[in-house]
Structure formats: structure tokens, C-alpha cells
Image (tube, rainbow, N blue to C red; front, side):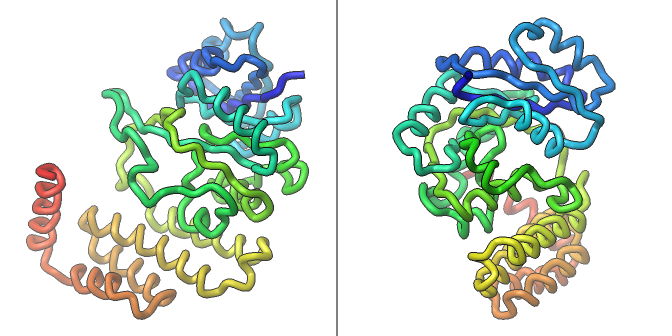
Length: 312
């Protein structure tokens, strides 16, 4: 019986899946199984997996999404600890060893997670994601996790008992593409989370700009999840002000991104929504005023801010 089950969902991953699996098999800790779930790939993913046939359990899904594929992997898994690895990310060699050690010495923690770096085809573009914000604590972190999903899927190691207690990953009808955040919140409501402040995962960033996404759809997904959390997690049902603050922050985040993309009308709409949740926010009122500036002034402010960041 392996100590760890590694679950790897993949869809049309012919370009990266082999390199990703190599980082799993290069771990200093070797008592694990690897379960790959092909979610109905139409490219040469299966051919890329051929050389790993004697090392992996390969399951097939019918293009139902990563949540469904992770659930298939969970059903087939045998380990007492479950680690997830997205099909285009990399693990550093000591990732499993460090987490298994913590799991053994701290049995009370439901999730053991780590810091990660971001990279693209040119190399590392963000050496530490944790460095971008305030220090991440260990312990009962439900409220902190409410404002930002700082648990990367490829960073998480979860005790099997957590899934037995909170259930499977939610499908898109509930999670709206945010099945990982949904799961971590459900677990964090009942278990403490251990944060290992060390980069042990490299997260691949694909060439996709914010303008390629639909800001309204992104925001709607976040707000729908917050509604679900408030209805489904007992600790949050009685914290209306906290939930309103969370809704404000997600509206603010999208509004600021839209404004930086020089869409003042779209930003204005998101800021007005943000102010419904926190009507006395000085920064939201200030940003709303900025959206009424002429476009040449907005372009100048954007170029000035970019130059300041580069000089810094």
C-alpha cells in the first residue's frame, strides 16, 4: 500500500505531461503511486504517456473537467495522503519528502501546502508567490482563505480522511471552475492547514492576458462561490460583515484589472457593485472618480505607473 497517491488530471497535454511526470518520479520520497486521468484528450497525450505505462495507473474520463477527473483519481487511490499535480506544473525533488515528514509529525493538519514559483517559456517570472502578500500562517485559516485562494492545487497534500469527511470535489454546477478553492474551504472549515514556507512547486503560466478572459464571468464565479460558502459553511453564516468584505475585495480586484486594461466603463460598473458591499471605501470612491478622466489622461497614468514599476 503506497503512503502517497499522486493524482494527475490531463486534457490535451501532449506538450507538457511527460516533463511533469518526470518531476514526480524524480522525488526523493518514493513510496507513492501515480494515477493519471486522461479527460478525453484529442491530441497525442496518450502517446506521450506510453513510456510511463509501467509506472502509472491510467484512467479515462469523458471530458468532464478536472474536478470529475480528480474524483476518479480519488476513487482509485490507495494512499493515506493525496497529492495533486496539474499536468503542466513541476515539482522540486524534495516536495513529497518534506510534506510527508510534516504529515507524520503533525497529524492534526488536514492540508499541507507550500509556496510556489511561477514560470513560462522564458524561465522563472515570479520566484515566490507568497512574497507578493502578507505572511501566510498555519492553523485554522478559513477566513484568510476566503479572501484569496493561496493553496495551489499542485502544492496541496491532503489526508484521505478529509475527503471522507467533506466529500468529493464539486462539479462546475456548484464550483463554477473553482473546484479547488471550494474544496480547500470545505476542508479548512474543519481542519487546520500547515503552510510550508518553501518553494517546492513551479506553476506554469501560459501566454494569456487578462483581456482574453471575460471579467464579468470571472467575477460572477467568485461571487457565486462566496454565496455558496455563506450558505454551506456554518462558521460563515453568522459573519455577514466578513462576507460583505470578501465580496467587496473581489469586485475591487476585477475593477482594478479592468481599469488597468483601459476600460473605464467596465471598471465603473464593478466599482459601483463594490460600493454596494462597502459603501464607505475611500479607495473605491477614488478609483470611481478616476474612471471619469479622459482616455488620454488614463493612458498617461498607466504609462507613468508602468515606468515607475520598471525603475523600482
